[in-house]
Image: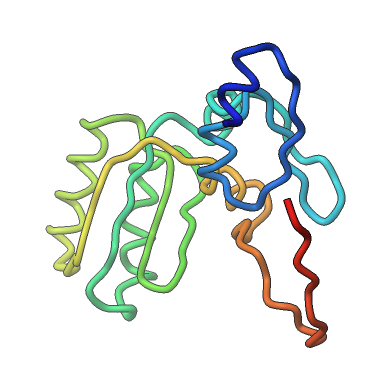
Length: 149
């Protein structure tokens, strides 16, 4: 329905905390965090802010995070985001990815899962703000009202 309206020339304002939804539906996105605009552009422009490809490495053991971060640092093009046993960082393509995985293996670090992928808008939000764009539970315990659409 939204795509149909837009294809007929209707301008729509969509507010969402679901970045995948914004990526699929929006031509122009303003990323807002705590009431401030932190980025503006189309989905591809926003993704380009944090690099083209990302290495995503899920470690078997949390105890290896610091050592794996040190090994990866030589191969990545920016800050390594760490969340529990998951390490995510921009990397310059398949060749650097292959070398990084070889170095992790040579260091004897056990890996549960690894991948090379393009960034998502969730990655953009996390990189720019340091936290996810997920809806937060209401800490005060107030009941939210359902607003009919």
